[in-house]
Length: 286
Image (tube, rainbow, N blue to C red):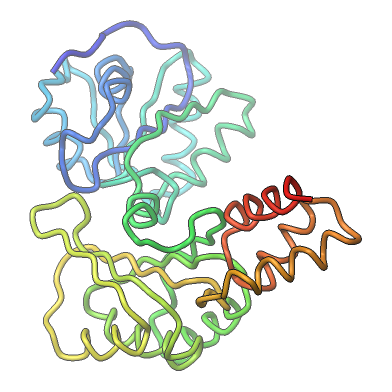
């Protein structure tokens, strides 16, 4: 693998790492890993293995553990290092730092000190799951992991019931069956949903269906691996073309095309971009 080794300016570099396939890391991410003065990692073994796979030498540099329980002292050491002119790269075990992974407090501390924070974007289970889900992606809400207890989990799901976005969750394979039952009971049995398992890995699986179907399918089967669950926005059901046209024509009597498309898309639970294209067609036909 080709990468560049060159001095980096002082700052905190958040580098996204593969969620499965090791070759998904970006060339820029490898450049930063090869060049940074100090490497911080949620899991040092995973970070070292990734660097070994791609032939990135340490050359005497340290790989330091940093996670949610590292505390203010560890954070302060990184801030001091950056203030002293060093470049620090941070990688989570997999995916993009801060997205249901550590890094938030570190980033806040570096920003508060008036020092640079730089992102090297790349793999993310949220975006990978949205891409293959078949659900609307123009607006989505990432809710991370739901609470472990049934009552708290159902309470939090209830707060998301009327959110007009595709909902995205992470879940443990041990709890996904129970979670699907909770989603079904609170959001409705017919709500469209998708379970993504082991994305980009050898046993990748994407299962689509209603919440009722998925709750039944996953009730007894053994589940392993990383799980992303997606649920369609409220009201995302089949809508007749003539109903969309009629709603747009009525809305466009008093609204601009963009505003009419936004209102109708929200009311019918359809992707705004799709409705906007229909609205433009109606406008041109006038």
